[in-house]
Image 1 (tube, rainbow, N blue to C red):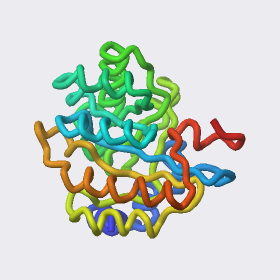
Image 2: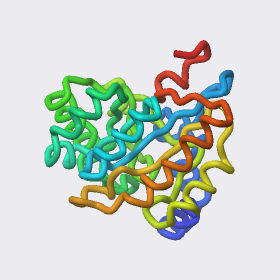
Image 3: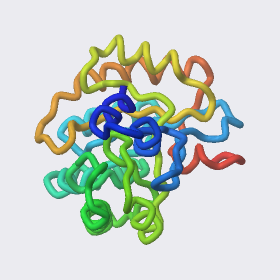
Length: 235
């Protein structure tokens, strides 16, 4: 669906260009990964677009289940809710860079792309004391300029094995989709925000997580951060 949308925008030679922009395995514009080696019965749970007011109940639930996750946060949301970003770190979760304002990066200038990631990196460092080593481009879209800024900031691009479509689906459908597409080494993408909207409704996501986590734990899966799941030898 994403590839088709990009193809429609770009027109001629669109299939190749769309794959470079949105293909999970594409390395055309920047280095990225979308799954771990799968050598352990483990998964990485990730959340995009936070922090938001809905992040706090999510943190509470993850703590109860003993789950550590990776949060790809937007700089504008960190500026609005710095205390929530700090609580994510205090709870032992990993932070990643998700740009400042959550734009679609394709067709943007390299300077715009650089500024989006650089400004987000600075506020994450200033407010949390953590220097992210991972980024996730909004919508999974990459473009010219990504490789340079990743190299300069020391960031690895992270996509996903399965995305929950939790911004538009009800909780049972989110949970069913994620559970059907899980395999060792997988990276699950959900959202504890909605781009940079204040007070977004992330209730369906939280309800889905309360189905997904216990079911996967019952199947013998353990949850790792993205950095952990990418290590062949494990955390």
